[in-house]
Length: 408
Ligand code: ADP
Image 1 (spheres, rainbow, N blue to C red):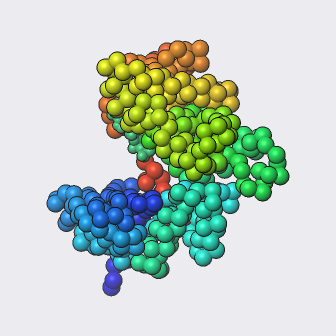
Image 2 (cartoon, rainbow, N blue to C red):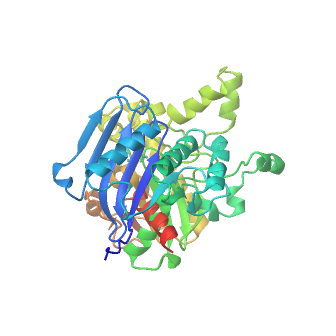
Image 3 (cartoon, helix red, strand yellow):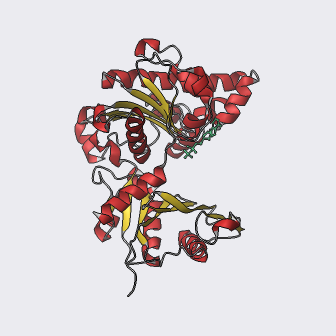
C-alpha cells in the first residue's frame, strides 16, 4: 500500500523587481524547512543564497552561488534545483501550495485568492497602481506555475488587511469622480505584517483578538502604522502607494502635495524625478545621508547634527501617529513595535513613547533594553496601555493564509 502523504508544506515566494526571497514552511508545525534569496537578477553578479534547515542538507549550512542569473525564470529554476538537492523539491507530494506575496490587490482582492487566468489578468490590471511591484509578482506566479502546473498558486495581498478601513478614512477629500476614475484612495500596505502582529498582540495579552484594540508600528526600511479595533483594521498610514505616512529609510512619508507642484514649476523637475526623490532619496537618507537606523543612531550618538535631526523627525512623526490613532480607537490596549527598527532599536521605542504618559504609555526601561527574538511586553507595570515588541513573520502569515485556503 502506498502511504498517504499529507501535503502540509507551503513555498512562500516574494518576488521583487530584481530579487526573489523564498521560504519553505511545513504548516503541520509552522517550522521552516529552507530559506533563501536570489538577488541582482539580470546582472552579471547575481547571487543565490540557500539555507536548508531540515533534511539531509541542513548539516551543511548555507550554500551560495554567484554568477549571472538572467531572469526570474532562471532564478526560480535555480531555487527549485537547490530545494531538490535537499530532498525538498517542487515535485514533492508534500507540497500543498505556493503562496505569493502580491503587493497591490486594489479594491478587487480583499482576501487570499487561488490564482487562475482571470485572477492573474486582474493582478496585471493593477500594475498602474504598483508599477514597481506587481509586475515582478506576476512573473513569480507565472514561473512557479510553469514549474508545477497542478499546484495551487495562492496570491496573498499586502493591501488586503486594510480593506476594512471605513470609507471616510480610506477616501481622500478630492473630487469624487476623479478619484473614482483613477482608483485614487487609501489602500495601505504591509497588511500581512499588521494582521500577524495585531493577532499576536492579543495572544500576548491573553485575550481574544475581538476584545483588543492595537496600534501596530511596523518600522522596517518601509514603515507604516495601523489602528486595529477588535482584530479589524480601521486606519493605516500608507495610502494609494507605500509613500504616505511615517518617515522611512528612503521615503518621505507625509508631505504637502504642493511640494510636488513646487518642485515641478519652480525646480523644473520631471514627474519621474520627483517620484524618485520622494521614494528613494528622502526619509532618513534625505535628511542625513544614511537610511539605516543603525548608522543614524551611531552618528547621532557621536553628536552629528543632521543624524540627530533625522532621528528627531522620525520620532516626531511616529508620535503624531500614535496620538492620532489613539484618537481613532478611543481605547487603546496595546502599542506594538515590529520589523527591523521596531524590533531592534530600543532608542526608537524609548523616544517614541517618551512624554506620552497622558495617553497611558510608559516603558519599563530595563525590559525595553532587553534584546530578544520573542514577543515581549516592555511597558511599565503601572501603565494603562501595554507596549510590546513582537517580531513580525510575514512569510509564516502568507503560508498560513495560503494553506488555510487550499485545505479548507
Ligand atoms: P524591510 O522593510 O526591508 O523588510 P526590515 O524590517 O528588515 O526591512 O528592517 C530593516 C531595517 O531595520 C534596517 O534598514 C535598519 O535600519 C533597521 N535595523 C536592523 N537592525 C537594527 C538595529 N539593531 N538597530 C537599529 N535598527 C536596525
